[in-house]
Length: 164
Image (cartoon, rainbow, N blue to C red):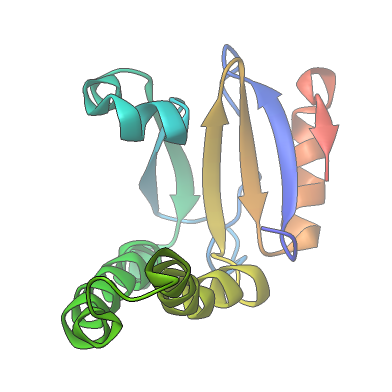
């Protein structure tokens, strides 16, 4: 998420969050939100889906109760909407490609890229308020608010691997 601020910490460290809501930035949040991330390689998971059973991480972050529904809608709603567009795209545009035509694979690749481009642009220019990405031995905590990310990095200063 290039327009977000990412703070990388080791997986073994339990993060310390500022006493503010990760969604709105309001002080003294009264609830928690759970974000799940899988640390398996996307390519390996695609080739061997059984790998998705392993490597899950759960991160709890402070949030105001009134924003919890919006947070989950933002997190899962855009993914569900993208999947719905992809399914509709397959049924509407794939018959237009036709079998046996020259450059069929390139046309299909172009359709896939065209179908994914709105989601990619949305993720880049309108990042989620808070998200996590887990890999190998580290976790990236991704914040739309640079101010919140700075406070988070300061609280976890001794463990921060990288701020991006």
